Length: 448
Image (cartoon, rainbow, N blue to C red; front, top):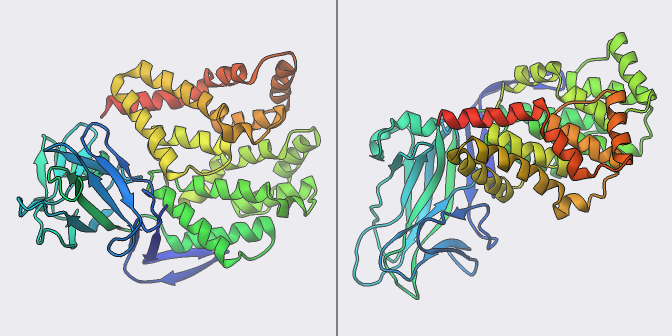
């Protein structure tokens, strides 16, 4: 959904075991131009009047997002995708805006609203230069005086605990068949928070360590954009590399190599720890594979290990993320075996944040509903997972760990004796491991 990402930065970065130095201004730019005729992840706030649509037939130029209404007064809140939580890295927003001329008003355009989790709002000016023509406007985040407060929170508190960034589009003009205002070419500029050169280097490392080759340019660029995309969702950057590794290790290209268990374990050590296996560890993991424990379960042990967490923290910095975002992402990774799409993640997280506002029981109920919803989704059903693969998915997404052979076989036997998949899922969600993650969401709600 992100139309363009450009990066330059200063960082000491690691390239396949070597250190290089790059210098320059640090920035990450995300642009939404709506030229494909879609919302590109934007959503409208249902509590306000008006209709949000995308006109793909022409704009500034190309497609643009337009607010339409049939009532005399109102604003329509268009929510930017993925922008919530700690937005300290956001430097500025620039956009093009068109307000339709109904012949009675001569001023007033779009506000940018930054809403805090406690309800306080900081908004920009809505002064517009010319009605009936495209205007380019901008707002910076390093100048609190440019914003107007509605509420009691400090600017810093709202920036660090944001519910979201919204464009409050005028829906009171009723011009040209109900059309009110449109926006296009929305550009978010971020201070660099991760070293993209190191990201690309690590992508190349995974290609070499797992697939034994250099990346094709389109593949490297695609994974780089995906990993940068999830950073804007307040997701731990490690999740991007875990998704990449799982995809590679289960790809036809890797499976076609027919690697032995010994080679597989060696690849895991090199990929995730960047070292050769120690003798004791090598024998232990190969022994578990020889006993029949699946490779994907062994992979879980590596990606959720302390050593991998420390390795990635040293390379790219530590990342934790918001607990409600993490839990939803766990379902995408564990059950759908992919990174979350923009619209899906936004929708699930919005539901969870509503539950957080409603109270502890609402959070716990929704957590169970989310897990069952993913299990019963068409996408998961179409994966046609065996019982063994289904359990692999639960250990990955629900427990975030590997499994001992006896434990894993115990669940297989329980299922063979008639326990259904929803019943097994329920037992996993009642586990201490999962409930601690749900409690983290409850605790986060209490501080908002």
